[in-house]
Each structure stands twice: as C-alpha cells, then as structure tokens.
Image 1 (cartoon, helix red, strand yellow):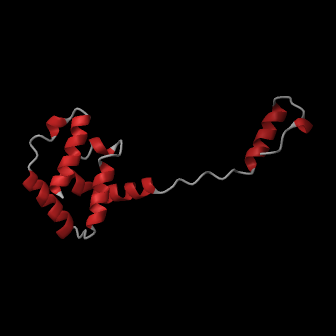
Image 2 (spheres, helix red, strand yellow; image 1 turned 90 degrees about the vertical axis):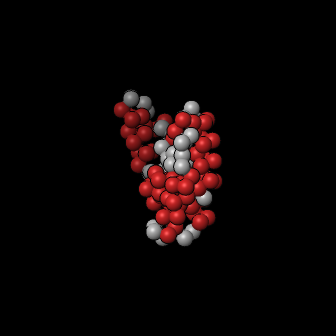
Image 3 (cartoon, rainbow, N blue to C red; image 1 turned 135 degrees about the vertical axis):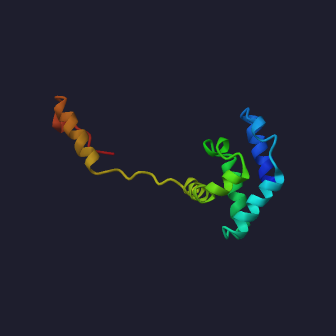
Length: 121
C-alpha cells in the first residue's frame, strides 16, 4: 500500500511542482501508517483504501493537501465520505411551481400585458 500510494503522490507532487515535498519520504514510516490504518483503526476493506488513494490523488483539492501516509490516515474518514459524495450522481433540481408565479409577477411589474405571459415550461 505504501509503495502504491507513494508512487501516486509522487506523480501528483511532480505535476504540481511540489516534488521536493516527497523526496525525503520514509517508506517504512508510510508502511507503518497503513498498518495502523488497517490494524488499529480497524479498516479491513483494502479495496476501499485503494479507492480512496486513487480518488484523493485525482481530486482537485485533496491531491495537493494529502502528500503523506500520515495525513492520509488522519483524514481517511473524511476522505472516504467526500469520495462517496463525489461519486453519487447529482440529482437535478426539481422545478419549483412558484418559479412561474414569480416570473409572472415580474412580467406584470415590468408593465407587460398579463394575458401575454407564457405559462408553458
């Protein structure tokens, strides 16, 4: 896990001009953080961990904020939730029936003929 995440983070850091932040990374410490995530924090779903790793290194905000295994572990719960929310298809806003009434009021307030108002759509 540590090597995989390090490679992903290094690629992001290099692309963002932050390569110096990952040069001195201690892979042994990174591996220990992932061990703690699994053993101490009780995260048994390694597929979820990988999915969050993949997501965090592509998300516009998080990819420059999570540059170590320690920070990944600290923020894992928040990251997993945000990933799930980001993956949900966004529901389109249902039109409010009051929108037409408001548009009609504006139409009349602008001095237009109420009988000429288009109530369709």
